[in-house]
Image (cartoon, rainbow, N blue to C red; front, side, top):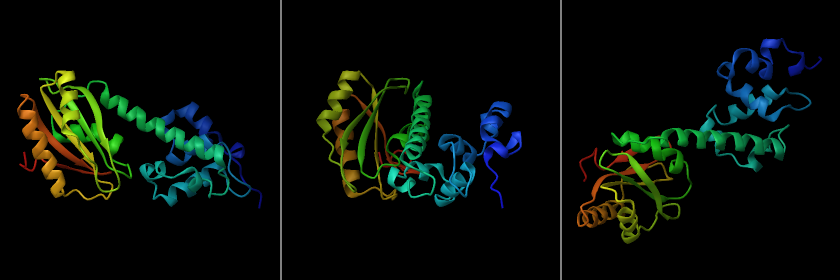
Length: 228
């Protein structure tokens, strides 16, 4: 049976032509990826290959973004160049999302802080500790990575944190770190570092608004749970 290539499809079924004629929002994830990779293999169209890749990650783009070049090139029809194209496009999308959130970031709730920081640390395979420095209107005036650790812990130097706070002339801070394990429950060390930072910040008349533990899909807020 003769294989039907994208060029032999009806105009509305061709991803590139469909994008031009109907707009980008009308394309499925598979069609968008098909445009990135350009062609499939001897037995599959680009869309078929894209559907197979998406099926492998349960149609989850966040999971797709975590695949390495090596993992992507295991799919028939995906070479290194195509794998790089997929990874690059997803990374640009992630950065665009972050920039949109960072245009005028104002923290009105713990969820606002989560939405701002999740794209940065929510999907990492190691722990990182970040601080948001805010003014008296709760607008983020700076953000800073204080430390980077291993799979289960990171060391926080309170002096470095407060030095940056003084430099930014902030009135309050929100501290955040991620749990690669996906567990939201704070550890004893999480509680200890929160208390240390809270006490030290008070001596400089800087308020600790919250401490967020962030995972890929959710977060734990010390403030929301009455632990500040």
